[in-house]
Length: 203
Image 1: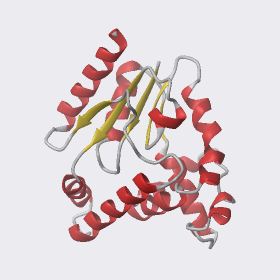
Image 2: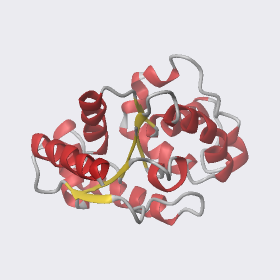
Image 3: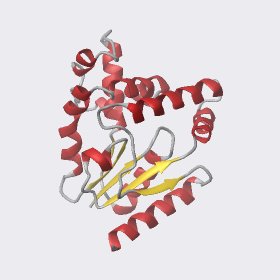
Image 4: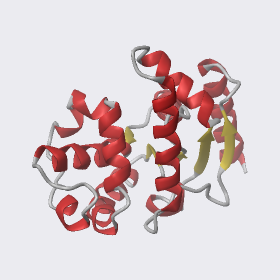
């Protein structure tokens, strides 16, 4: 069984995807880490993340790379949004994601284009969202020293880049179930997600 979980930054899709993977005993891939890895590698190499050819030089995913703690930083998230706009970068990471999705038994993947590009044939698709203000508050709770206004501006800018890019833009697949987590606790959002997947499986 393949479960595709898409949505914007800080919507809760990662938490929900991990919970679904645990519930159904499936491997999980946060595909955003792939783009964060490319973004961080590009910056570390002194290259320009906004230059497609330069970013495409840093797309090799080596063992252990996704465990780098720097990939969880806000700066890595911003870099990921910048390099993910490039068709060459997306093409380089496409096979890795598809192989993961189609492994024996299936998998849960979360990202921006899982249900539309990586696994359009997924057995269940969820599009997780929340208002930009709620998502900014969540990030601010994680780092109270950061400026809320700056976090909100960054989230809005990332949303615009992700939705406006020509290569695999962020959008809800036509057959994906929408789950707005703005007013939900983590537990309630997870239970709702499981219910949506169960309903999709029964169809």
